[in-house]
Amino acid sequence: MSDTGFTIKVASSIEAVGRDDWDLCANPMRAWPQQERGGVERAAAYDSELAAPDPAAEHFNPFISYDFLHALEASGCVGQRSGWTPLHLVAERPDGRLAGIMPAYGKTHSQGEYVFDWGWADAYERAGGHYYPKLQVSVPFTPATGRRFLIRPGEDRGEVSAALVAGAKATLRSIGGSSIHATFIGHEDWQWLGEQGFLQRTDQQFHWINEGYGSFEDFLAALASRKRKTIKRERRDALANGITVEHLTGKTLTREAWDAFFSFYMDTGSRKWGRPYLNRKFYALIGESMAEHVLLVMAKREGRYIAGAINFIGSDTLYGRNWGCVEDHPFLHFELCYHQAIDFAIARGLKRVEAGAQGEHKLARGYRPVTTYSAHYIADPGLRRAIDDYLSHERAQVAANHEALDEAAPFKKG
Image (cartoon, rainbow, N blue to C red; front, side):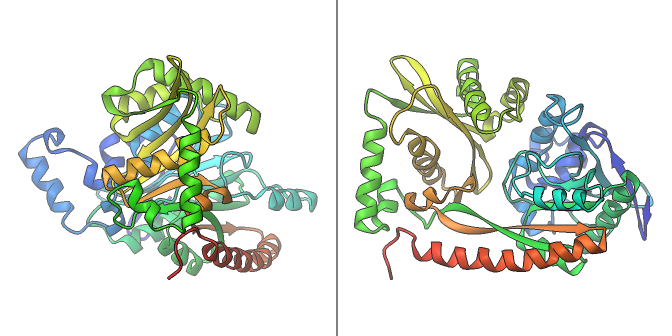
């Protein structure tokens, strides 16, 4: 497929793109540590390219890294019979130089996305249309905001992004799909895609914001007295009955801890979703390739692990993902997933904790409402009009809800 100045190719696996090229576009400031850059000549060229990077690319995001996405494919969580078929879009200059990438997947269902369109699919199918397949521009099973236009440093961001969107539309036609969904994108890309004819959607999460706290006590001091006392009591009660907590990352991640965490994940996932999305091989792969970017918060009692939560560490953000337990203890979920995450973020000097999708209960623990963004290209004009009308009302409701929740935040007024 061609676009002015670019050739758009579709990669059926991330391996077809390659680690160096992918990470140069996805996380250029972390793509090649100095000792791995392949000599002085390559290092000089690399540093020259980074002279004017996309400002958003200066922040390391573990979920768009080659290692994370490769682990999803290599483990079979993505591809094969999962309903997620890799269709990564790659923009190249006429001389073959890589200019940008869009992580994309052909979908035959709407599971594992966290921006729900089941109602749209059902309405279209009942009207005689075929909603699936569709093209999903996202990180599978991961409701975390990040870049979806991965532009090589030195390239014109607008030109490459436009070429990738044109390639996405051509790919949609080639698979006979109904729609393109770019989910958990940044506000700037959301606005730009709206100008390109995509429908705009908003939703809400809860993030903890580090206001320069030096300790958890500093954070508590910013809360209203009643809320502060409640959190202190929660933390005390969570660790009653002889429970201790470990932070495991890097070389301290053991096979014992991974096995225990996976059993917690399977128990929780089986009860919540029926079939958990991730498998043990996925966790083994990220344990090998991403250990320095993984944090397991594990609870122990009487010498054995009883609960745990997994987080991923970015350059300025701690991303909370999955949790599970084999023993029920009051407030242990809040302690491992929210309070311990704040402890770690303060100690590391991270700017925020993203605690995943949904959960108004996070508000009482000092997490603030944050708007999330997605953009949707709907090929059928009739379906597009109906969804556009629905989204206009939904955006207004999300904004009103955000305002009300922000007012109810547990922080001291004024």
